[in-house]
Amino acid sequence: MRIAFLTGAGMSAESGVPTFRDALTGLWARYDPEQLATEAAFRRDPALCWGWYRWRAALVRRALPHAGHLGIAALANSGHAVSVVTQNVDDLHERAGSTGVIHLHGSLFASRCLDCGHRVSPDPILADLPPGDAGARETPPPCPACGGPFRPGVVWFGEALPEAAWTAAGDVLDRCGLLVVVGTSGLVHPAASLPMRARRRGVRVVEINPVESAVSTFADEHLRMPASAGIQSLLDRLR
Ligand code: APR
Image (cartoon, rainbow, N blue to C red; front, side, top):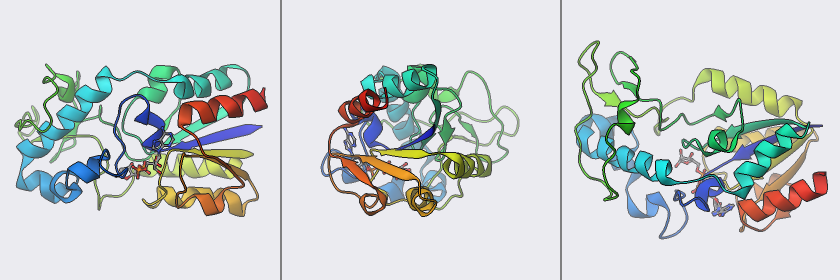
């Protein structure tokens, strides 16, 4: 059976990566996305934005995949056809061993020039990462090709999703026999439309989330527990 996982920020919460909308702890409870996660915000104050994304990159670099990430990778290695579609910009699925992960909202580790799209290696977002203090202002490095500022490789509010990723995610959803939705509030479209799309095809949808979300109505089954425990219990059943 083809199994697809659609993951959100809750998938990485137990690795110490904050979610976006969880009360008090979520990034958007502490920072204003309009000030940090739009192109207009970046053009207005590039040092504030770049510094903030550097802080997030440093945080993700210190984080480790948990049993849930490892379980998904192990399932693929045990002969199941497994695909991972994620809204997350971290690389915890890949570090757990999952391959071909589809990143709908880009990646923290794919910086490019805001003006010409030029990329360099190593990624400047990782250069001499600052210590933990959030939001240290830092001027983004200039592009060696055109002099424009480097921007993080994430999809900002108001920006379209990478077309190739969206098309690939659609293919995965249209071919899977089971969809497991892990740790998303289901509030951000078009990613949030994917569970409904699978459900319309009659695919079984399992939700793993400690609380109700906007996905819950499209799920056949709800595992009201954290990602690591929910995925482990699902894998025990699949085995
Ligand atoms: N295990 C599973 N789910 C969890 C856990 C956990 N340990 N901790 C929290 N959750 C759930 C929350 O209950 C919530 O429903 O994860 C969800 C996180 O929701 P959001 O913070 O809204 O994150 P997400 O759905 O991924 O956001 C979508 O919004 O801000 C943008 O681009 C950003 O990709 C992001 C998109």
